[in-house]
Image 1: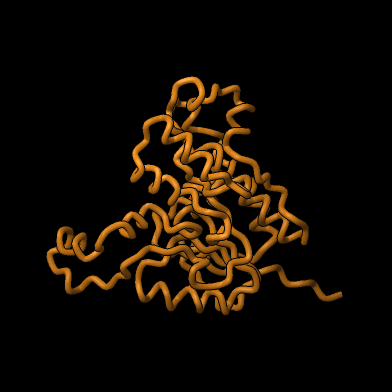
Image 2: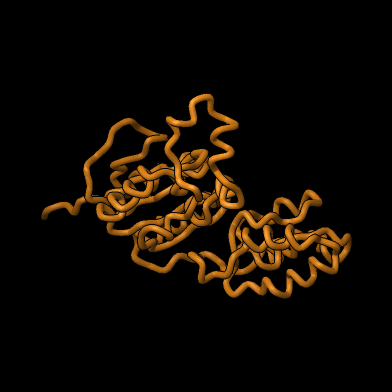
Length: 250
């Protein structure tokens, strides 16, 4: 009886810090199980070997910030049967999306001695702004256990078991007292997708929204509460930019 070929996995990097790819390597024992179930055809952080497409599954890290990126992501999409974006850069634009609030040309002239050699886009945008994305895994970096769960679900043709609740639930599970209620500290926990384990609130810092918006986030209500806490309108606008409406690429 002929043996079935293993599903082919490719990992792609765009504009990012590589932290989400490292999260995959950090899976250790779990990664060995994944490696035994798939053929890793392309993974720059793990090997220089590059296998030609098509690929059954592609994991894409990083945002689109250059004209070359904008062209390359379409090629990756054409070669991929299933495409998952991983991390805040790929799902929301990342830290580099701070450029979206200013004129990127002013940064280029201030940082680079020969700005004429720099070719970049005016904005940093998520992968979903350019191609169809089958699934998004948020976080900065991603939760490695969520990644393993998604890979397992795809390989076994089942729905991933990833909760859609907010960071507030994680605070309750850790026994962390609500910072907004007890101390008046601004926090995006009520509208942010769980997955980080509520790390920031456990260290007495408000949630920054690294894991993106939860399902049906009530940003209007949170904005009103932030106003009561004395947060300025520009800061509220920036905060809501980190926790957009789920229709915007979530």
